[in-house]
Length: 368
Picture 1 (tube, one colour):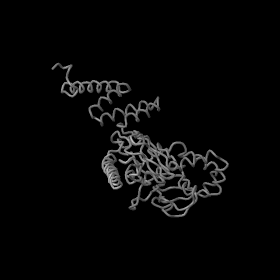
Picture 2: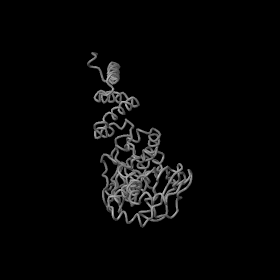
Picture 3: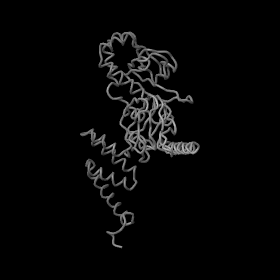
Picture 4: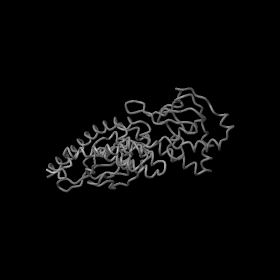
């Protein structure tokens, strides 16, 4: 058989690919800032299954693109989640320290000095269940915020640094604190009087908007941190997914996703009743199982291309969070321990859905 007629899987073809990889390895070594060479080198490596080396090349390419074209850098991560890069989320976008700086200016340096207090490393600002309706401004140091899982395990939810605030959830909705807040190092804080802060927000809508955005972002982080599968992720990755997510409200009987539709997001039910629906063999449209609040749907699509196995319908008014699949996949590729957990979870989910479908078939037989 002639060489040009050989299958791509033959040794000769493999040797040719290896030679091409070596050529481009030399090219990126000689021209380390050539974006075209880096991209093609990474593509060749991925074809050969050399993900680790490809990830290094993609990270270098991302760094180069970030200097002159942030849009292209972001697009690269969406195209190649194998880069294992997760954008730093600690900044929480606009308003991380901006709100705190606005408040400090409004209250004045003299007032801040008069009412600030020092707290020692390891001291509690508050504990879960404590009543509260005020915001605390961190002057210096760092405050750690911990949630409690169902089995009592402490989950790091946030680290609050200078000029940032903590306690915004109870300020907006007075009641019991849902987290432990502890000084992660010796810190200086000041508690902002509720009435004075409310008056300031009424007079400054831009500050009120920043506070609402921060509260919404942190609420999303809390939802993700409360999930048994996601809470093992490093904090910056949970915050990355929270920043990329959006929350949608659905009216009763709304079709959220159609069976056979390509999965483009990982969904989490926050509130309401949502169910998998499909036609049985008698063409009766019925539920094959409910999706409970806090459950993820579509997460296994980060491991393989998939479509919805059944219609997803809101049976009552429902609130759902949607994490773009590309962002979720970035986290999976960036953190191998999470990928291992997701593989086990995927098998469990497939078994669960197959049982639901089988149960519906049994039910149909009893009706006929």
